Length: 617
Image (tube, rainbow, N blue to C red; front, side, top):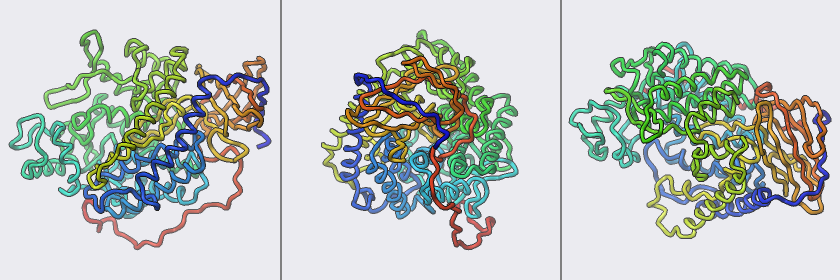
């Protein structure tokens, strides 16, 4: 602690509107989070719902219903919210173990779009407090499912560097799916395009999955063509491996992430620059798709097309860059965005790109989301990635919907000197969304046994999106399993916890090539506050110079955190020069924690011969 550079804010300020809004959002979320849990859960935290739930789907939606709790806490939410975040994780894990989806505290088998939605919850818990023994134990065990350490969950082929099925988890690869696995999704998928163009007896874009005969034909082809081998979506598993690395820094985790993304880069080069969406167990592209590089599970054709491939390449690239500092790991994601852009065309004055590849060629044209290049630029801040954003067109149109899931365009405009009203607008938008969800709760008189798995997710009133963007200086993380990539996060030194101290507001008000500008405000009238600001979500950056803008005094530093004492009613504006991605990421707090080493508990489990595990786990 004695080596952390210290600064003092003594200048009295009138509280700006954004600061009042931030503290209002924090106060409201502290209240409504508790009320939400009391309304929809039993005293032990389990969901008030059905007595059974079949299929492989559902636990992700339950976890998603509370994942904002740990994110909100690490921004400055109450200790009660932190307690509820952990209570709900444990309760949902137990409940869905009883339903049958979860095994050994992890989904028995599912895909990494849904795993990503679930386990973002865990990544935020790690940022909340790295000294929770069972969190660490889980992280190492879950990573073991994917790096070849777990004898029951043999998901990974370490020789060919491939994950052995699109459907994977704590029971290993699911090489043959059952009708029951899809039982809760058949209604939904009846509205999606069919996964193949040559299903016997089906010559329409959609098919009735609820017709048992049709479903039987579809499932047969799913198992023969999609259930074995690797897909790009599995790149999202790299977040779980970084999660384990952030607890203990073991080289094996870094090596795995690098090896796995390099394997996909190699497959893409071999496929003439187009990422193949299916690789067989032998490592052959198109092994179960008659040699076609398209048509895999969550691939170029079905069900969403390019969105999932672009997201997974970005997530993996950012994770590899976080571990190594090497910007070149973003090239796989860049190459696929550039590929689609090169095949675009003008429609009604807008440039649209293909998002799907059918047997007849590229199709499904639409506008590319600014979030794809924006996530790259946020990490690299390179001119090339900036150009990828600007080529999309009028910056004023970038993600104008402040309530959108990945509405980061407005934030981008703000930190680059445009859209000055963004902080107040974004916080007010979150407030309106909180109120909308509270109205839904107030009018929710339906029978819980009729609810689907998205019921609570749509009503969770803890909405910290703008709070995260403004206080950390980063975009919202990619929803399907991305880690938090930001410039700074804050700690309450006096309470020895993550998050803003009481009465304190923070705003990253601009971003520049080698740093950013941060404003800190203490709204308390009589008491000072002590805050520590860490360079990056995982301490991956390093502060090199601090200018107190109000006085013009520059101080050279060499630290990944700074400490600021905020006197009552005071504020300070700091211009922070930063060396980016020069430190190994870690969940550690900025101060030493006096605790005994947490060596993993060795579980007493029978020896399992991987060859004896039935197909599908």
